Length: 418
Image (cartoon, rainbow, N blue to C red; front, side, top):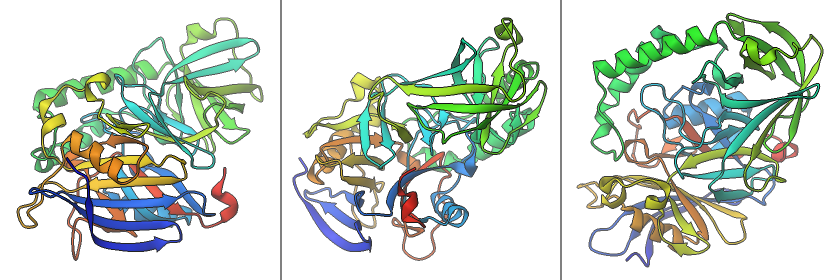
């Protein structure tokens, strides 16, 4: 049992933000990298970054953190990988919300999510998101965001859905597959990966073509936000265009894609107002701006006990093997956030990866009152001030990941709330 963590190095990255490397006690020590942040210090904030700013994009952590800092002017102090993602297509698995826009709304099994409110306070729970669009007494249920899985559904595409809708093409899927094939270098470290085959590629290309064909005839209602997007708040939107076929993504807006039959009762007109709302099943009064998903819960109300079986994960390797892992937690007050990356077993340093039991114990020893596991294995990584903590000197190429969870210093403290 892990009861003690020995400090190898420790430094303040910025006011209220610390990076520490620990080794666990015992004959098989675990190398534990930790960044903690006091969210109450003005300018400290949590932000989620999407690979290539696209639902299906992936990017190396270091590139992701550098690009985000350059693009926004907010300084990324530290970043870890977050959501698991679907093979080949790369869409994040489970909830992903970025600056109030829902990148992915579909829940997966009984997986756990971390939702962040406007003040960066975290809630770790089994969240589910539902969506609705209202107009002149009509209400349409939103089934998915940024991807179509059924020709009868209403879909919302936002800036993360691509530059135009439909965005998926056979050529793009082939490019994604080629990228996924490069991933084989990381598979040995993983717990959840499956081998990719030419048959997988063929099926994915067919699926992409089916999706594009289904999307093409849909009515596309082009909307501009009249308020800041956020979860658990109505977002009024102005209708700025109505079309079908291929439609470009508007600035500061989204595209509502609707089967023509759904609009039998009436079609919106230019300059009409439609209300888009995404709501959570829990804490419905809280205005949430960011969210990531993973599995399983590691610490619940101070008790270190993973909940893999309860959440639908039964793989022995995933649960019991000593693997690279990533985790996120918060202390009892909710003011301190803890991001953790455990390195894979390494013969040079004579350290091992962690089991889920050990990960739960580590999070508890670090002071987590609530904690959850994020994507691990070959995806595990942490950059502090754009430098990967697992490597000395020049960082090697690391596996591109779908979602990054970042601690940032905002360029303007006025922007610390949305």
